[in-house]
Image 1 (cartoon, rainbow, N blue to C red):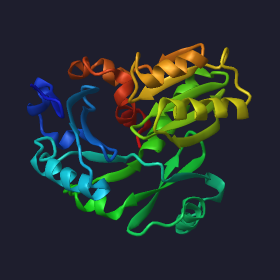
Image 2 (image 1 turned 60 degrees about the vertical axis):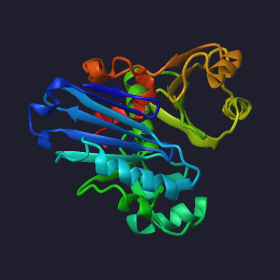
Image 3 (image 1 turned 90 degrees about the vertical axis):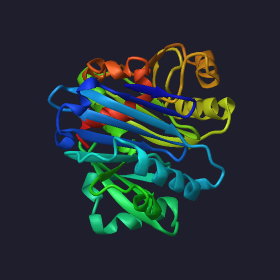
Image 4 (image 1 turned 180 degrees about the vertical axis):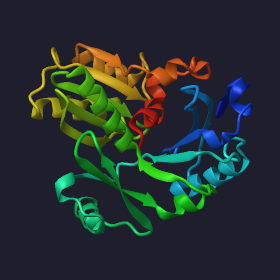
Length: 288
């Protein structure tokens, strides 16, 4: 089944209703501008349902939460009882802490030292197995109150991005390789070398000129070559977009992140560029 308009999309595999959802995994991606849902069937090793809602509001996060509550109340995918539910929260408010220095009781200290304190914010931490780090991040307390989910695990988008990229880098044993994941108002940039994490940060941008400034700044700081050190893109960017065009002016080689096996098995996603939902699909591989 497929339903689509300018702000809402839903796609379901015919097999979605043939087995109890208690065997499925639900992944929800939230970014303040939209909500995306993916349902994964481990037995068939494919995604069997996808829903996306663009949320247009001018009331900031609390306006978003109200729209989110309405969406989660009415969406048919939410009403099922899943084996596992993972919620990915997209935000720049995160910091990395070495595994050897991390203590759960001190994560607020790490976080506030680097990012300052905001009221009504819950501080969480994800263990990154591939990089021997913890990703410490803030989640608005009001967010969880509007999901209406009985049981779920909150994770940060950066955790999925870093874990997946490092798995990719370790398998390929790439020399210095740049990865960029695009969000509506910021982007994540990661540099790896032979399976090691060299650099990770996120940068806010409003224009394509802001975007390329930060990219080239990192290239200069890490002594990377626009001729030899290529970029692998994921997230909200397409060819012939302003961000892609300006990037192509300065960087010789640009590719999009390759889809995983689970995506290739999933015919409901065939019209969705795989790199645009890469963080969601990578949750299955990362086992976050």
